[in-house]
Length: 167
Image: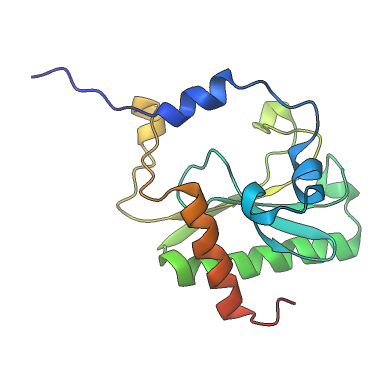
């Protein structure tokens, strides 16, 4: 059998990149450059953005604008909007990609796997029966058929079809 390799060049960028001093969930929405920062939806208290290093195409993260480390610290309007954006994200992802299911979760605290442990955020990951989710485990590789900028355009359009007024 020939030597087979799977390449994930984007992963090296993530590994070698200097970790920002500022919180990405604070700095990205403050930049007011949604296409550049891959923010697909803004609410009054929370927003949804693409994960720069996704598990699958369309992998979203939903976070409050307010910098808090725990879901317990969200006030009721923030918690409601976080879940409303999750609900809208499912609809937008269904319209854009037709996934067969979703993984949704909050990793609260470093030991629970939080990459950004001091700003709570909810992951929404679309899934398909034939997706390549096993690849990160056996080959340290992710297979993504769509570029991140293209995913942003696709999801912004999908949000517009489910909520044309942007409310």
